[in-house]
Image (cartoon, rainbow, N blue to C red; front, top):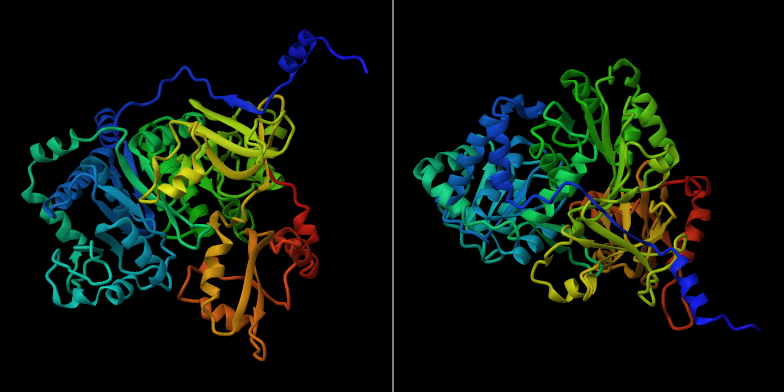
Length: 580
């Protein structure tokens, strides 16, 4: 064999294209806090419509929204909340959610987003782990009575004055603010919180606002944990303000845009990509309903002449499939984002043609990266726009590495996608071990997603290293459900997997081994979950088995479980649907 000269080897290596890309930009990062950005936009567009909450019949200009934000911030200050303390918000999409978001940003209080679907067990963990001093909650949402659940965790509310709570199970929590007009023992109403603000001067608010730095933590968002407990991704002003700004900028946002926001505000999609995308450009935030309703979306787009529509694939599928879809005029739409789950290429094509969203884009990311790392571009070829998750976002880097060795792989080779830059979270709240396992020494965030990059630096997501299930845009970790199901007296062992689903992207399947000598039904297992864990975590299918496929060393082979389940449930056709 002829040995190559060292210079030839060097030439070959130089010619090799690696799976790495950096996002260049002529536009600098925003070096200011969210509160200051909000005030600058208000000064520029005081009479622009800032917020429309249709289900509440609320319409606020930027100037009017600023007045409410400032009053809420002063109310929180009057409660004694200091920079760095945590305030939880447990509510669906409402004007108060938006007001609380910007009020906490002004005074440096860290907003803790609580999933509206959480039940008592999950709520208690999040409040304890984050050490929330105050909680803002809606009275109820769908089948969840938030008031009763909080009273169950803190029965001391019945005997205490508002703001004076001392609860055995929630020792850090001192104040509960309930959205609504009714008076409830131990809780402030929303109007009472706003009235408290009258005791604080504009000068005092401005002084506290000036104490903020853009690198300060301002938001904690909980993601389901592989250890069975959610982890609190801690995000700074700099993280999320810039991410919202650049996602919107790549869609050519202007102050004339009206953004229909059916995605939940507790998630990065709602509060960052939508709310912060709007306030960095003077655009209008439009909430069609408290929770997703395809008819409300179609009505809102038509009535408000929205130019932008956001959603996870299941939302777009529901809108396109609504029996009255053809009755609505959607010609005002121009752009929008589909994200949160793998995006079927055919659905993207229908959104472009039937919904008039000629400039719709796909975004990819994760809560821990604020969230977006890659985004398709308006001027990209159609196959790239509908069949990939785009290219790296401005001011960020992405690379694809061999999951075992950690080395960058050549283009076209599958590996783990990693992100680095301003968007990477500060860490998991009070969880340094989890932080160090997610962010390496060179500051790369390891996503756990398997991806490929082509020669033009377009990224395609092909799978996940970890077992995370993405059901309808919600991240679900099997271990969390498994830990809960282990508490069922009839279950001796359980494994949870995700399988393809035409509506939700993925559905949850539990393989259950029962204790010898007992019997159970699928509905019995599902009933055990209801009211205890969030509805989207409840297994759709339960398969009763005697054993699990395992390696010789005893490791569960979940990929074989998936294959067997796809065959048993007849999901081969769904599994073949191509996504980005």
